[in-house]
Image 1 (spheres, rainbow, N blue to C red):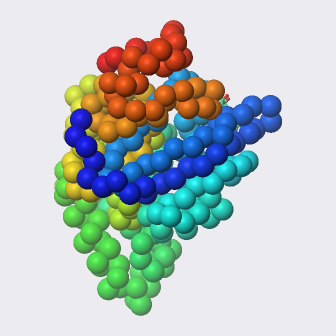
Image 2 (image 1 turned 60 degrees about the horizontal axis):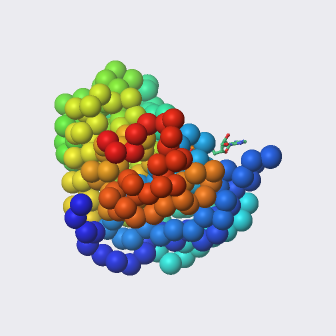
Image 3 (image 1 turned 60 degrees about the vertical axis):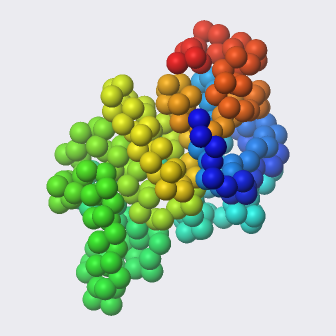
Length: 263
Ligand SMILES: Nc1ncnc2c1ncn2[C@@H]1O[C@H](COP(=O)(O)OP(=O)(O)OP(=O)(O)O)[C@@H](O)[C@H]1O
């Protein structure tokens, strides 16, 4: 795997803990994501990956610990404020607005950046006209990049599943993030489409995007990631390159009875 371009830390997680009644889903976890890298978080079912993601995105409040983005604490900020600072995410279970057009779905992401609100835009309030047109042009450019421009006017619900996953990625990118949180981008995709998704993520990273990825598809994780964090029972059991974590004894034992790590 190539080395990432920069060495500064874009995301710093310190002593992060999340307890639900009776369960410590994430337990005193610390790690960093360097600017310019693709970092993956893996671990068996129930390891705490989704809870960790939700705390970084601002959906779940940590019980303890700190999350810093670009040097500043963000763990008490609401989701939209984190998005405005440059953290965008996709969802494990697609969150596409099926009745809205493909273009409008991307523009929802774009609105996080501009001043115009989605509501005022949808109501075509004139004062936001110019800004709205600029947003539309950016959204169209994203659809072109991902091969969805011809579908721009169609209801998003009419897209094939793989296209919806790409649409969600385009929507996340529309907010011009500096950190992209990808929650199982390959889930549900056949091999060829998963490989294409991996290539898309690699291209984005080559263009400078920092990526934090939760993924069960080991082929994708091992081929894409500069660095891999392995969780079990909410704690870090290993961290390092694909070669380092693949044969780590604790990783092997955590995955016994689960999928193979050597895909
Ligand atoms: N809202 C909640 N209330 C209570 N317990 C929860 C809640 N969310 C997660 N948990 C528990 O926290 C632990 C970690 O769950 P989490 O979903 O973060 O794991 P995961 O690694 O994402 O698993 P998977 O790979 O299956 O998605 C599990 O024991 C889970 O049952």
